[in-house]
Length: 189
Image 1 (cartoon, rainbow, N blue to C red):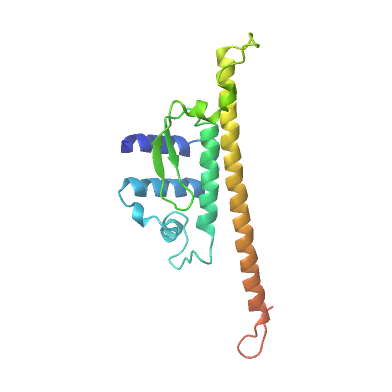
Image 2 (image 1 turned 180 degrees about the vertical axis):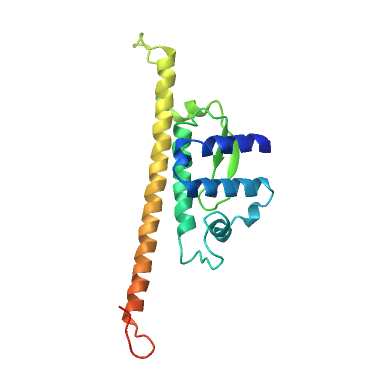
C-alpha cells in the first residue's frame, strides 16, 4: 500500500466532520499514522503520544494520567463512526486496533457489505416486486452503518467505564492525601 494513498486517506478522515470538532483526535491520529509511515512504529507508546501529540509535559506518567487510553478509545469510536457514514465507500481503511496505538492500513474489500448482511437475506425478497436494486443496496448499506455505529458505541461505553474506574482511583488517592497530616502537624483541606 503506497504512502501517498495512506496520506490522502488520512487527509480525507481529518477533513471529516468527525475529526473537525476535535483537535486532540486529529493530532493523535496524524501522529500515529505519520510515525508509522516514517518507519518508527516501535516508538508509538503512551508516553510519546502524550508528549508529542497531546501536549503533555516531559514528566507525563501514563500510570497516573489516563489521557492517552481515553483518547485512544475516542479515536477508535470516531473512526468507526467515520467509516459507517462519510467513509463508507472509502477504498482504504485506517484502524487503531485495541491493545495498542500503532495503526493498521487495509483495503476495504468489495464484498464487505455482503459480509455484514445476515446470510438469510442475501437478495431482495422475491415477493416484494416493487423493490429496486438500489433500494436493496441502500438497505445493505444501512445495516452496515448500524453495525459499525454499534461497535463505536461499545467503544465509547468501554472508554467511559475506564474513565470512571480511573477517576474513582484518583479520588481515593486524593482522599488519602487529605487525611494525612502535613509537616508541622497541619492537615490538608
